[in-house]
Image (cartoon, rainbow, N blue to C red; front, side, top):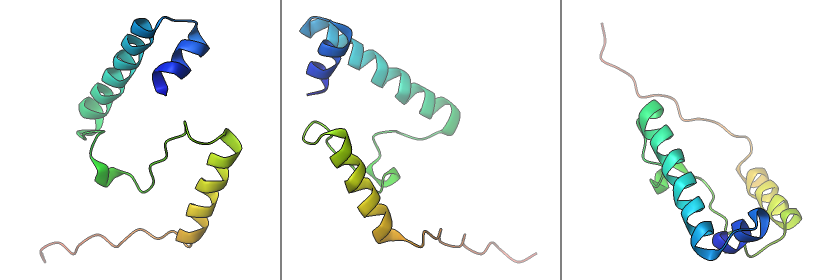
Length: 85
């Protein structure tokens, strides 16, 4: 679905769309690894994954809002106590 979407938006062939996605994904992964020392594919970094190819933008927004509302109030866990001293 991502390839098809890029093809349509950027008027690319299937191989060019696939290459564009690989280029963007690689750049994003490199950025996060370089500056934040994280692996963007680590599932523990994300609270919600959506395949936006199944829904329109409004439906995706409603799903995100409903998920966020179910998590409110959003509180971060307290950091673990360090060694005394």
